[in-house]
Image 1 (cartoon, rainbow, N blue to C red):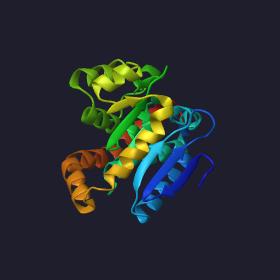
Image 2 (cartoon, one colour):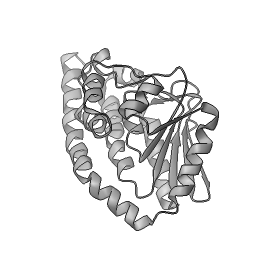
Image 3 (cartoon, rainbow, N blue to C red):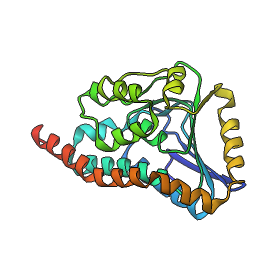
Length: 237
């Protein structure tokens, strides 16, 4: 694994931890390592806990790559947008333990899980694309719409509203909140409990209720990439 993505397995529960020592930016390399970690977990027939480093789940796409533009930026966007459908359709339970700030692509990755545990603290949760001059991608909007209350969805998309953990819980970003010291223990309890489910029934049911959403995401990826490429051309990249 890349030094930023760590994989461990215990009792059929795989823990995938993103930790770059900074803001957990989702560069092309980090995204590929997350894919590889999910492939390994699927090979191990494991439930997954996906988490970040202390006080940060992920700040989203690597802005240095985004600003340079070109094919590497488009590859990063393709990997990130497609990862949402990969996680949504993963055949075993996925629990996100959100350890702190989660922004933009970090939010969309987080909301692709089956269950999201938030950590109390002075943290911000936001899909801040509009605030930084980006039109909200179709993939991102579909992911947000699937989880948030209608009013919060409107505010999150059009106003780039920042939510603290308590308000994030109320509007649907989180399924529950715990103290930071309890985060991983709670995630491990839920992941181990999920192993009692009938695996076939879990997989088929999950994919059945998300079929329309994952199809929408997969159809939207090339459209969002085209939008990004046209923006790059207009900016002379």
